[in-house]
Image (tube, rainbow, N blue to C red; front, side, top):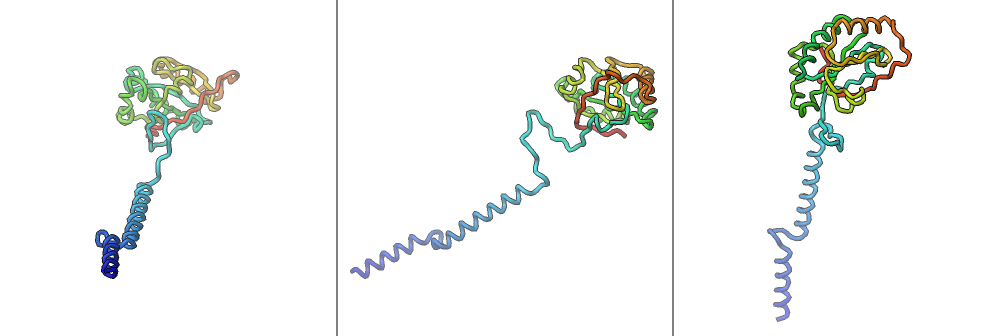
Length: 217
């Protein structure tokens, strides 16, 4: 009787050790294999698709793949900064003059940088119009997307167009609110290019590092 009980116990133990047709040891190997397979798959997914993005990002951050432009990049040049927007009629009327100024004086050490306010005025709805606008008007100078902070740094730009003429050493020579005759710009540009002006007490223009909508043609 005892031999029969022992045999029954062995059969019961064997049946408990088998699950899904596998022994306990075989199941252990299977689970280990599945674990390492999952780890390998996750590793491949996390390391595919190029460089990982950096973060964390501030609210409303928009990651761009384009270049950024700084005012300090143009040290040694006379620069006309133009705060504008695509929806602004006076801004649009002034664009051809800026294009002509770049064509005329660009080879002499002059540059125009357009600071678009489209990204934060009128709810940012016209930001998508900036690049098509550049192509339509044949803009030949760089355009950057401005921010409220940059507008504040430049004395609080309350209306557009507002423009600044910056000398070769990064100092603000003049500020203009509203549409400016091309001849006014030309007189000032010639002064700065010929170094024929008084530099004392001119304020330093705030530097910036802003995403470029395009680098001009």
